[in-house]
Length: 224
Image (cartoon, rainbow, N blue to C red; front, side, top):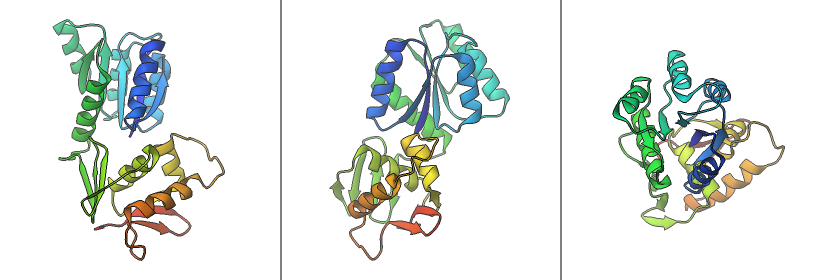
């Protein structure tokens, strides 16, 4: 899942970015309100973690403009403020949730999963395709009930494609959403990871879970 972190305090930003990356999130970071709004309007994010006190445009102003433009991506506000009226102001501006500093990264991760789940109308955090099950919260994968170990990148690939079985993803889309690249590295990076992942989640080689769409990309087979 792609998350934009907007935080001007370097120590907090580094800590949060590292913690989210360890939980499998692809994190972009900016430290300025004006740059944040530009990113939020130009790139699709699954969620945004937005500090209120920022250089340039403040977080609440960024959020109001973002909602005014019709964007619905969930936003969690971060702030040192704790007064009730200020929390209400943030929620009225269009925030989906609110976290007061200091906070535990584990709590932020849980809240991100909750707001993303609500935004996608996904009733459960468990994704299934045939005999493959992916628990997004515990990051556990099973095939036929047996646990399978995946690398963080393999998990990201599988989770991303299993959210929409049958949908074909180009290599460019996978590079952007799973690796966070906005350029073509001119390598077979995606193909190599898909081959490794396919071996782990497709015991039946003649009927693989992940299909190759020649000349286009890959998809998770609908119905498993």
